[in-house]
Image (cartoon, rainbow, N blue to C red; front, side, top):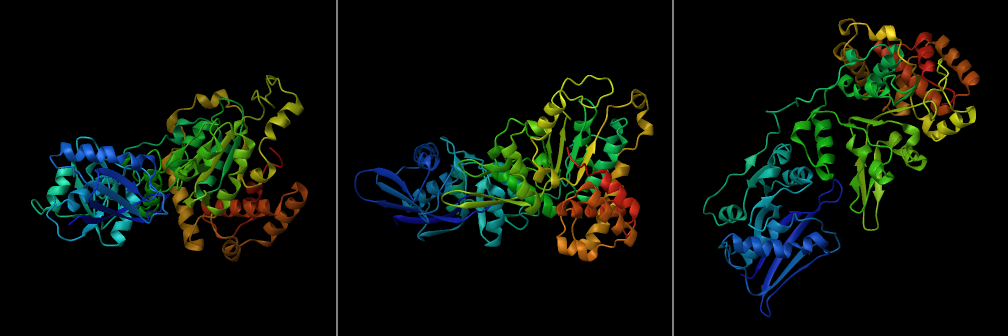
Length: 503
């Protein structure tokens, strides 16, 4: 037999289309060519495969070797096809003792020059797809824990090319391991900072609680050292534990990213805090291979943008669509990739460039025009999408002297957040911030006096239609935190406190 066919998978975003690896040995001058739109890393696999076969004790055929990666119009990236190419050469040259052209199962893995199998990115979505087709998946052992998240997948983890060949020759059969998920390590030991470590800032703490309960975006404006960053870092500790579905979705995104899957972050809500010098592609996603950006890496977690005006305005404006849709589409010439990005956005900024505008000490060195110009880096449409906007002041020194035992900790606040979210899930099936507008309006119970109060506030404060709906959603969250079904005047009044007329 001079023809062999194996199945593998390409990776483009979260999609893993099947790739048929066909190997043919024919007469003629010895050569080794790979066709089917391979990129540089795939073309380089010729040298890796040749060395791996020889160093594993196999013969490398001195014939004309043609490897076809079908379909031909699908771009092939990375070293994931090394293993199926090597096994295809062994099968086609009769070194596996197979008479059938097609080998069962799916294969993925990069080869070292000595024949050892090395981990490849994006294994989790591949394992999930292999599970749907009821095929076993032969993969590097280093990827086994990641692939184990795909419950029900039949996995064959291997360390070396020789081990893979031994299994296929039926010399030493390995039973595919049915994955049951990572039940042995349901939670990580990663510890979130506690709210009890923050003195004062009662308004900021309250806004953070409302933000966590309803999934609302939050902007904190205040002088340097007032605790904005500390508050933001404690938001993940107030959110409910991740469900299996949420954890799996987040793990898939990290699996295909340059960060890779980290077993120690399983079921830990992501907290991403990119630097303001980052590019739009780093924040939104993109690049040559359409990698997920920070907004997708923060899916089901928190995205914190510190020093908000220092980000490029064009970069920030690209957040507007993902904030509302919860998805980001990255288009390239050959394909379009879609990543989920349902993150909770929290940001912080100084009121002016020096940071001390409005400070009673008179330390501000900025003119009124300079301070206004600094804040105008944040566009009106983007500000209008922020549900909670609060101005924080410097901490009273007397607050710093209070003992931590007298300050409410994250555990107590988290319980209120969970109770409020249960009410929202029962009523809407989602958080108040994520609910579809028609569904939210149909479930809203608003007192007549509160409705009249909001109408007057809209006229007096020039609140937009989007701002009107955001105020109602925040007010509903405040009512949920209080265990009240009907939105009342005091709920509207508090929600309006978090609606600044201008930054």
